Each structure stands twice: as structure tokens, then as C-alpha cells.
Image (cartoon, rainbow, N blue to C red):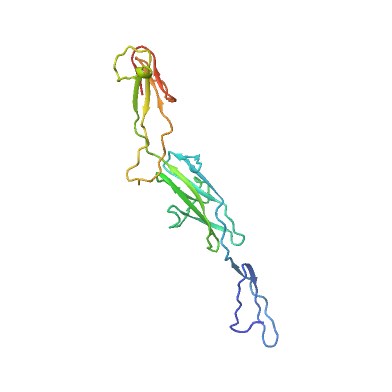
Amino acid sequence: KLISNEEILIKTEGSTEYSFKAIDTAGNESEYSEKFIVNIDNTNPTKPTDVKAKYDGKTYTGNSWVFANNVVVIPLGGGDSLSGVSHYLYSIDNGTIWNPCLEGNQETESKEFCNISAEGETVVYFKSVDGAGNISDDYLSYTVKIDRTAPSVPTIKSYYGEGSEKKEYVSETWINQRKIVLVPEGGDDVRREGASLGEAISEREKYQFRTKYQDNEFTDWIDYSDNCEVKIDGITEVQ
């Protein structure tokens, strides 16, 4: 039985349904009112549990270097037993500023995503947000590495002879030898303009070379292993 100005204090988490009826001093009762539902969720959701990422229509594997204009990163999972996970937040500055993920579309094949385009190493943090606005205490981290900067052009060191008889060979010089050995040097990744001293960049993975003998066409590019040897009489161009 309620009297004027009496209040009901609702503290219980979850969904609680109420209906009201009026009773006069003679004991007559009205019909029940329409139901009124109170939803309370004070519990933070759990953090996202997984991440899917792609670039140029390909699957991206976290913490690996890739040549790409951008990498689309999609947070997944996280749980909330009451209001459910509503959306995600992301941060790219060690958790100082959190922004809502972008709304997904057919291209991203996801509900939400964030877009990483900066060269170098970017660590993305994700948090879950539930339907009541509660934010997960913990976060899921994911590392994206993008390198669009070509390495510097390698130099070539060449020699002939063995042991104490080894001598430097000068390009385009005619010489009476059975073998000329070519060894590439340098070709390190160029630090991007404006990059800080400690900014991560990818490293040289390998060398490749190709040869052209006399008036023939260049061969296909070949992975360099220990050395490149020229043993044929005549003019051989090596790149």
C-alpha cells in the first residue's frame, strides 16, 4: 500500500519489473498500471579477448612488419552478464586518451574497428564498454608495425684471390682471373624524416641480385646467400 510521496528505492542489479495500482480509503482497487522496468548494471565488463586485423584484403598478424597504407584492427569478445558489451574504446598513447572505435561496414566486415596508418610501431589498447556505460578495468593490447620506407641502396665490395693473395677488384677493370667475388654491404632501413631516435623501424631482411652477361637480358632476382661469384669470361653486369 503506497501513500502520497512515498518512494521506492531500487538498488538491486539486473532487470526488475514493477506494476502499480491505486487503492482508495473505501478499499476499492484500480487495475494494474503498465509495467515499469528498472535496469541497473554497476558491474564493469571484461576486456576484449581477441583482435582481428587486415590490410589490402589480407590477414595481418600482430607484431609483424608489413608494407601497407593502413591496417584495420577489429576488437572482439569481452563480456557482461547484465547489459552486455555495447562498444569498444581504443588508445594509441599508452592509455592517456581513449576514443570510441569507428563504426564498421561491409568492407571491414565488423561492427567496430580502428585504423592504424602511422609508420613505425604502434601499440593499440582496447577496452570494453557495456550498455550502462561501465568500462572494463583492464585492456587488451595489440601491436601494429608498418614500414613504407625503402632501405638505402647497398654498396658492393669485390675481390679476387684467396687468403693473403686476396686483392680488391675495381668495377669495369679487365683482369686475368678465374673468379671475382662480390659481397653487398649496407642497405639498412632509412630512418624516416622526423622519427625520434628510439622509434622502431624494420631491419633489412635479405639481399637480392641479378646478372646480365654481355648482350643478354638480366636474370630474375635471386636471393643472396654467402657470396656472388663471377666466373665467365667477358662482361658481366651485376645489380
